[in-house]
Image (cartoon, rainbow, N blue to C red; front, side, top):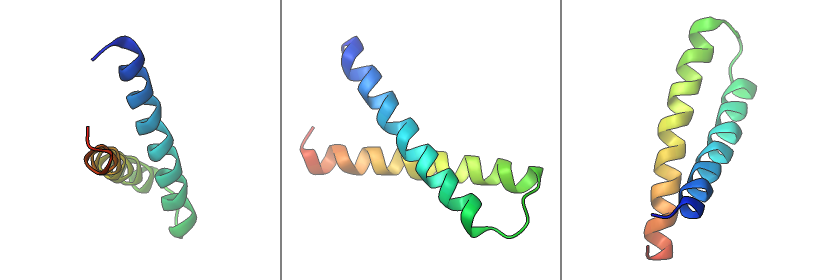
Length: 60
């Protein structure tokens, strides 16, 4: 991977993570530290899956 491809992949991951973490915050009722940590972790796993799925569909 060249530098540009790596940066684009990181930007895509961060965009997915931000969107999914925001969705998590909208859907929970009590915002405390544990919920924030769990939400960030789950959003990271889901963002990784979204990036991987897009790459499979795109044929890379």
